[in-house]
Length: 341
Image 1 (cartoon, rainbow, N blue to C red):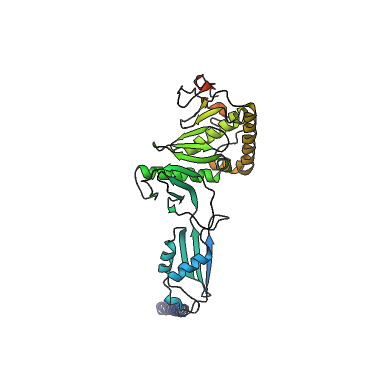
Image 2: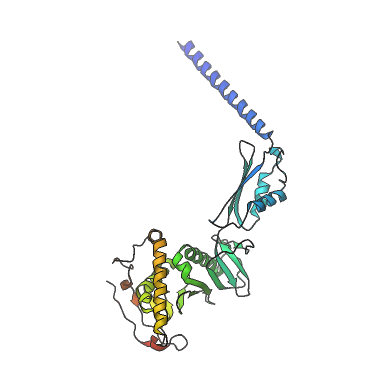
């Protein structure tokens, strides 16, 4: 019995060795056959922001020619240095990632992912460029004009926006990128914010499209809460009183909205027109983004919600201190104080 058992074990071992050797031979033959194949052409796929095309297929093909691909059809696959070609493509400022490989039909597949700009920067010394979500500086495109949030007053000596930088410049760059991405994805703020100015203290002041007031935003921290407070103030106050009642709206302090009132020189017609404009803007934004905004910010709809920090009555309207340079008219009077429920 022992002899038969040993013979069976040897038989199975020999069988598996034979199968393994056969698989190895087939694998080596397949690799050899593949390496001896020639290129049957290429296919370029460019992925990027919908409706935009900062890099087209012709430009990618030209870069491949610079990398040594040239007329690739008919050339042995082994003659292609795919890593070098990927490196050449990656030097283009608008290309975020490039991947090259040959498929089973001998087609060189070129997959390119574009960078997506989130803001346009204007520096104090007159320079201008785009930045993407990772902080890479991008040149202006000759092919198309991109509608993006605009930031002005960026320090001239802080042109490097890369994520690997440290210190105040890195903090400012990160805040610019976050604010730009947030505004750009929200149809209401994209339509309402004309530009964002960076002060010497590296705070943000926003100029609206509708309304003759300045929005003091503070730094870029807790930006979602600040925009939420500002939207509530727009919806619950300015949509009724008009957007020209205040010269300045300050949302930089947690849980507060501070409004500095103008004088009584504004006309009733201007006030009514401002109300109509902002009401229409709010309605349009709610139709486009109500469900997405509620999910993205983890907040409930504003109407009929009594949860803390969901309606205007949850915020204190703080009386503005008198300042001749900033506040005129009724700004020195005590503002309404609404207690939290």
